[in-house]
Image (cartoon, rainbow, N blue to C red; front, side, top):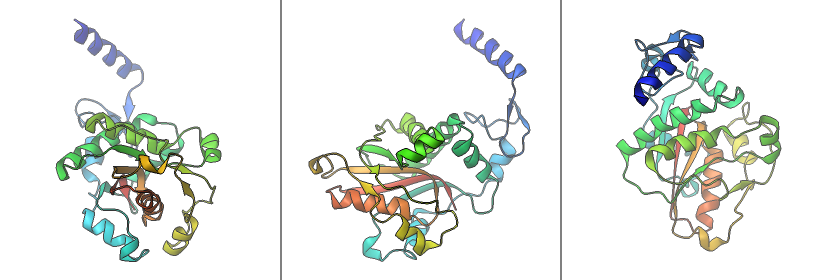
Length: 237
């Protein structure tokens, strides 16, 4: 009975406020919907370019860091977003307060993680933003991605394990070397060092570009005793 009533309510809401694809703006209905995705129609979903392998992603970091300074063991990413329309989805998540976008695609990202690895993580860490930027935007988009990953993998999301202590300018127009310099020394660990010893963490963010932000976080965690750091992003730029 509850399922029947839920379907009626869901159909009524869908009629009054139909869901639209964030890429092509077409109405999403039962005919063109991917299961559990409410913001991307099946055509746009299958048009997305799959991101590269973990090896390819980590090799990209070698253009910015010496091999000994690459702190990520394994990298997961869903889609290539270089000059693709999936950036529209990221933009809505980041600036339009469509939190559910992060959760839904976080769940999809988690399915990829399950397929590729059996690593057990002590915690999922969303890439933090500075408190000033959080006040300005109102939220951290990476937290909602992390929540989606957590729903599937059942590892806790911990936002208090590392903080962004310094406010820096946007890296959008910076080259690889400038990005590395921009994030140097900007993270701090608020907990006692003993908490991090021998822990395995998964860092989650929206887009992987050069990896400078994620690698800076990972090095800070490893320098304080963590055993292994992996990362997962929705997009690979």
